Length: 261
Image (cartoon, rainbow, N blue to C red; front, side, top):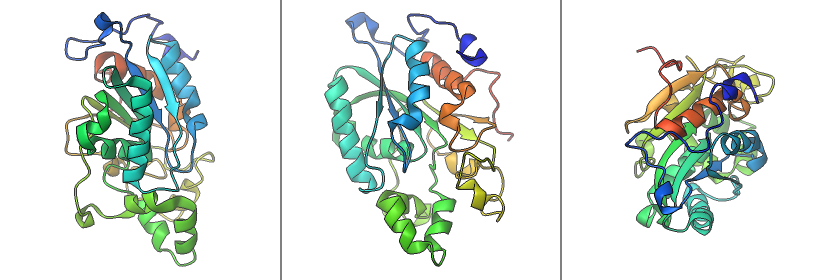
């Protein structure tokens, strides 16, 4: 266990504030669903899932889904069915998402009765809430276009759509909502950044794949930043500490780094 997680301690019951209920009185442990991003599987979030499970009494499930083979709405329906099978309609459910997983969650919120799930909140890691400039750039580059569609899939092309061109706005995520944005624009472990950083494809602050400005949304949220690249964020112990704190308190700690106004 790293220093960041040791600081959290190993309390058996999470210290929820009055507005974030654990629902343990009805003998129902809160469920945490962890969703990966595009071209990934649940193994990419396994370290984060273990950290959550080891520092709480939550029931943690890291799910896989066919991120490149279906559009966002179909992915949302599939994930909602998996969550229903795990939690039914009564257990309180939190979501922890990485990258495109956040948008899949938002599409679940647009399903009838929010997918039949009792959502209690979420933490989004590097979410392209305003769409993805990098996806938009790569999908239009000559020589990349056909390969992009084949490799990255229809859902990623939906992320490439500009906000103004969407037929309907994406639904808001479950509340409370915490957002963790990365600020390291170039890293060996983040292949997309090998192109976006040298060619200045993402102006301003970014994690090499998603710009800081793309993580924001109009719905109420608590936004913090962390010095890590897009791919490494779910594996970072400091990010795990932030996630666990938000699950326990419904907000990030006061000392967490927040974007300057």
